[in-house]
Length: 303
Image (cartoon, rainbow, N blue to C red; front, side):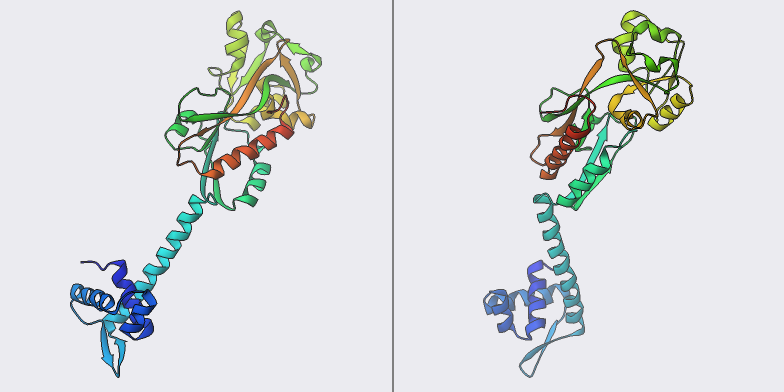
């Protein structure tokens, strides 16, 4: 049979004060209440926890052991209260993030730097699993923030517009196509095309399939840096989101070419849950995302 927290508090108070009366004053209880809880504890344990010596309550060996345990319990309870308070206040916890483009996170470090100054106790975990469906994961509570170009229209979720980008073709600076202003569907018929996933590629969905065009060769390359390296070496034309490859366009390592005259434009959103259990730091993180992309997104920024 276990002791209650109130019984442990009484044992600890008597040990500290060496008096039932003083322990009652410390705990703001009546003396009979303290004596009753002590008796309950001794009955449960089957022996005396204190001996009265010269008017003072001295702990027996069993009493000393209970006091030691009571201290540990009190410290753990204090830690529990502090941790839960921090969570409710939004200063502690974990934030789980994922994006449908799971191989490019060059935009994340500046976001983390600012976010951690405000919420140093929140650990940001990046889920780069290629087989996870981010929106459904947010609904199940497995993710806190999902970046997507396909915002859901479902109850319990909110989509915050971050920025607009477009799908571009990228080539090496010395590629014969580098001078082109844009590429049309038929231009891809004689090309080797590098994409993350041909089955989910906007190039195929919006440009090639409607025209019945099939490239000479298609290579699925899951990692951004691998795709960039292959394009730089002249293995083909990469087609991907401009913001993903923006650092390489900025340095001149690659040249971006619009796909179709009007381009393939997309809107990126941060999807979060509207549930009452969503910590306040999730909203703060999304605000930092908006701030980052407002300054660095390649096309029009969010309002």
